[in-house]
Length: 139
Image (cartoon, rainbow, N blue to C red; front, side, top):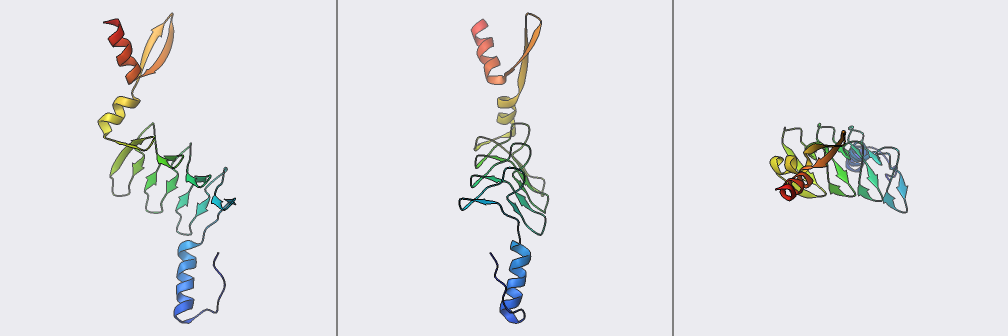
């Protein structure tokens, strides 16, 4: 919480700058960052942070959206994204994570690539790992 103090002078300028940088909308539950229907923190510069029970968490998009354009996906406080890189930086750098595990793009694609098998006319999607196990058992 930023307290109002006399403006002007060094301390006044400091408070004004802090207010600009730290002004945010927060939902706090039991002293923790927590909000279920939107970002728990919105900074004046446009950055947004989604928290659930004091952990960065969002299931329908990035849990951090920075004003620079950087986006970071988290589930339960861990970097995680199943349909692309979990970190997309404004610089263009990208990093892939599943459940907090740092992966190369190739490792990520191998783990998330879905294969389709058809049984009795029904299409069933299975992971690359399950596909390998099935293929192995058939040989």
